[in-house]
Amino acid sequence: QVQLVESGGGLVQAGGSLRLSCAASGRTVSNYAMAWFRQAPGKEREFVVGMWSGGTTFYSNSVKGRFTMSRDNDKNAVFLQMNSLKPEDTAVYYCAARARTQITGVYDYWGQGTQVTVSS
Image (cartoon, rainbow, N blue to C red):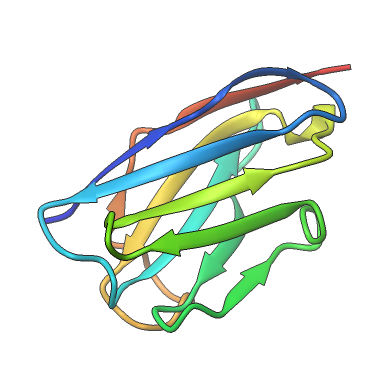
């Protein structure tokens, strides 16, 4: 089993930045595909960015150029640096892990989420 705990959410003004962290425990996730998803009020959960186990990333068009996902295998963690935040980025952000190398497919483990609110 893998436990994922997100942190770093909060309230920020439009144009600001936040850095989310996702700490994994239970198993090493260095060989796992990892991803960030988000869910805004009244909307379905959407994919934000995924990282293959090898480190290649794939971003949704809505965040490309503003968000950066990184991984620290020594810390068994992934991060999401969010810059130039917009009010439409407001959502609960979830970290997810998949016991495969590729980001496509069903994710096996999910964190509890962290709230990001961007004020205009």
